[in-house]
Length: 486
Image 1 (cartoon, helix red, strand yellow):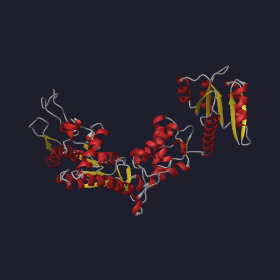
Image 2 (cartoon, one colour):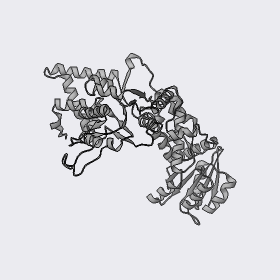
Image 3 (cartoon, rainbow, N blue to C red):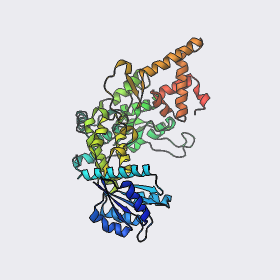
Image 4 (cartoon, rainbow, N blue to C red):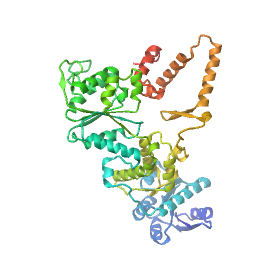
């Protein structure tokens, strides 16, 4: 039986609540002040407290503060006829389960109360939290006991004993930078600098200066000499993330550094010698980019001395429970609080979900659940809508008439594409001058650029092509002038 303690100094409010919730499976107790509530709680042992904010004696917020000090698991719903933004914020900061304004809508009131009782029952079922990882697992930050991850760990160990250039491949969110940092921290250069640069996040005209530096007066605004990442990282390790988005001229300079250990600053003509270990990463198939002449073949082979593939989360679902517990501990440590528990059905839902955003998406989901959860246990209602709705892992193969092709986290059914193609051909029959492929390609590029505010990196990812290919298409279709792209 669930026990509810009602705390209000108005007898008619207590009477109304009793009429609504006094059922065979709920036991109602009352108190007319905060002091009386604090005295009653140890004896009544309620599963939920519903309390007014304004009362004689100590007010509801102070009572809530003291209740949380005595029992951090006890859900408390605050209510008032004098709602202000500041009061609502303060109540939620103090740990209230929810905040209600009088007069109540009975259906909404019942929904919130029953939700709080569900949370209370869940917290009573979960007795303790047991970490599933060894302490050293937390230090490295890479978690996994699955066979694909064990292969990654073996390669990290092998690469740590050498200075070989390596290429880390894998989808976005699979932890490529963590792998790079692990190789560095266990390697010979661990006492030297480690610098990371995202090649896709820096505009092309600035990337070369960022990597190699520039001389004073090299271009407008270059008022002083600048030391680039390569020089800053001498004797250390440089991590080039998303190297597949690098332009061909910059690729040429990177190749020269790998071959000779020397480069020239932008606007300079004096060679600068450095000793830098390169670790590169990409979420794109570089072999395909090489075939399309968008990535230098000689640079690809220079980088791909040893390749480490970080597996997507859908290929290592056995690690999901470990990862969830790792994130619970991590966030608890960051906030100085005890880790929350997580219900088995939540873990089951996590293991069923496809995780297009991989480990990064899982981390965000756990953090979001911690923020919105009302007690000491994470429940299904605390999960994002798409995960709670039960989107399942895609099977390896589908019936041909229902086959799904995925790209960039989105999916389009083959039948849907066939409908679009059929409509296009009908238009072509009506207009003999319509060239379908160029026309469609041009419109897709225009829409992608408009949707991304002219950001070519984002537009290329949206279209599923490289940035270099997108630039070629912009010039080919004379889109630059139309959209005034700089």
